[in-house]
Length: 161
Image (cartoon, rainbow, N blue to C red; front, side, top):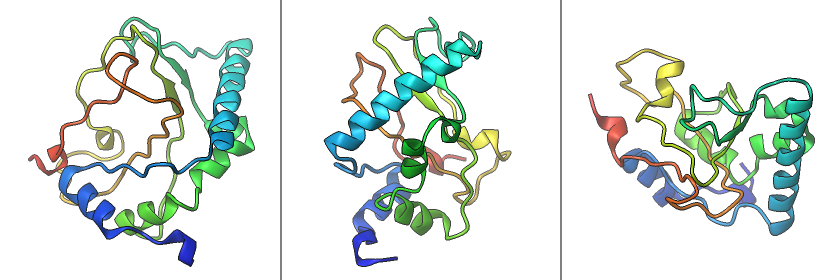
């Protein structure tokens, strides 16, 4: 890990305690613009190929736009997956041998329905979860709030049995 890739112990502690943490200002305005543009292009390409991007089963109201397999849609996504400010935190929490098992975009639009409460770890391993085995990194390319579909979380719920 280089000097540029230091890990803030307070962020790691917050993640262990609450199950989430924020790394502010990771991307420059140019990087945000590039990711937004690539995501719009990826969604359009999926629709042109007949791949659904609106999934009523997952998103009540079918207003969200989902794009799967982002690594197939441009270099900008590969750069996000191995971002030098984020990857050190992933490794600090999960160890150095990590696997990217899912890289998906979910554009939550105003008026979208809420998903039911769930644990994403359940898709890769059954309960109980005595140790941290998986984690998500959410890249917010727009400011989020309750109106436009921010992810809800229950601090500490990863400790529930």
